[in-house]
Image (tube, rainbow, N blue to C red):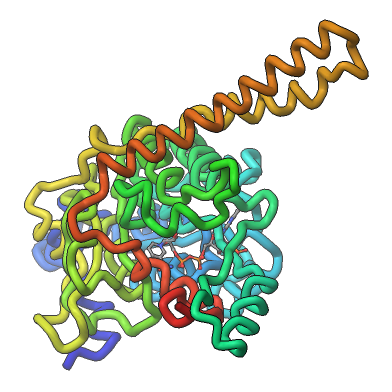
Amino acid sequence: MHRLSDLAAIDAGHRRSARRTSIRPSTQAIDSATSTAMLRHALLLALVAPIAALKKVLVTGAGGRTGKLVFKKLKDDYADVAPLGLARSAKAAKALKAAGAAGDEVVAADVADEAALAEAMAGCDAVVLCTSAVPAIRKRSLVKLMVKKLLRRPDVGRPEFSFPPGGTPEEVDWLGARKQIDAAKAAGVSHFVFVSSMGGTQPENFLNTIGKQDDGSGGDILLWKRKAERYLVDSGVPFTIVHPGGLVDEEPGKRELTVEVDDVLLGLKSRSVARADVARVCCAALFDDAALGKSFDLASKPVGEGTPTLHAASVFEALAGKTCDYATVLDDPPLFFAGLVAYALSEQISPHHYGPIGAASGVAFFFLRLWCVRSYREHVAERRRQRRPAGDDDGDQVLEPIVAAKGGAAPSDVV
Ligand SMILES: NC(=O)c1ccc[n+]([C@@H]2O[C@H](COP(=O)([O-])OP(=O)(O)OC[C@H]3O[C@@H](n4cnc5c(N)ncnc54)[C@H](OP(=O)(O)O)[C@@H]3O)[C@@H](O)[C@H]2O)c1
């Protein structure tokens, strides 16, 4: 059985052979430097190179569960990396410091803040995006469920979730991610690792229903993430995109990791993966050319099945050149914005304000809004019909760990 320190050494050591553009001076070069001049040169290199060659890596969402592990791994196991963690709030920044980050290794900023992003990314060689909209359980829905359970009602239902204002999937997973990609491009970042999620090819995935309003707006977290991924792919910034399955808080290196593309792994029974293993894969990607330009799904076999994956970078070889096909990625939620604009205008241009013309425009906007919502719903229904994979379930296995980690009841626990 490998100890964690062995695993760290394996992951950190493996990349030296994997990446030709190693930024560490080779000790062999020093060994072979026999003449005094060469020895002096090598010594000078040894003194100067580690400082000059430090790779600066910004980890966003570093106050989150996966982000914190990525940050810590880079700091503890990669001697030639200078990590910088971006946490949303002062509270999250404090938690990151408590986990071992030095004061100057943490920036507190929201990803909506373009100026803060530009400042944080200045001089960075790489970025690991670990931000995500975070759903919260509606407490009232839990109370309702408990009452129904107590009354032994058969239709107990599921807990309801919502996103806080400013923290919806559209705002964080699309607009926030886009701002990070833009800032990375402007800063000349040479590798952008994006931690996203499996299920992005399924509009009907249960995760997309979280925060969904009656008019069809809101939610769609996996679709907004995929939209941001496409933006990254088209941006020209060298990338690696990881789609983990259900995240669990377990020790790294205990399971055999499985990789595939285009949600194929959702057809398997075991679709979960340890956050610590996701962190290992993200860190390894930063040092392995085989990870460049790849977008893939990551899960693992149950503990005790298969052989634990000791070289995180071996997953890139296991992909055998495959990468997710973004040509088959679904359309964006299409007419929602048009509906919103129509709604806002119909509210503003009322008969009260502008007389008969205002009344006519208000009515027109009202019908436009109805049309937008209807066509959006039809579009989603059509996509569901076309895309539902045979024998698909509703993606609870991806959701359950989120719910459990937030101290709530998993949907299957309450049904
Ligand atoms: N949970 C699962 O089972 C599962 C499955 C597959 C994929 N994933 C994906 O894997 C990734 C990592 O998941 P996780 O559970 O480790 O994440 P997490 O703990 O929920 O962390 C998300 C982080 O994003 C930060 N964040 C949110 N909005 C932000 C904003 N506007 N500005 C700056 N930071 C912001 C949060 O800050 P605060 O700490 O201030 O809230 C939090 O630290 C996510 O993309 C998630 O969707 C999760």
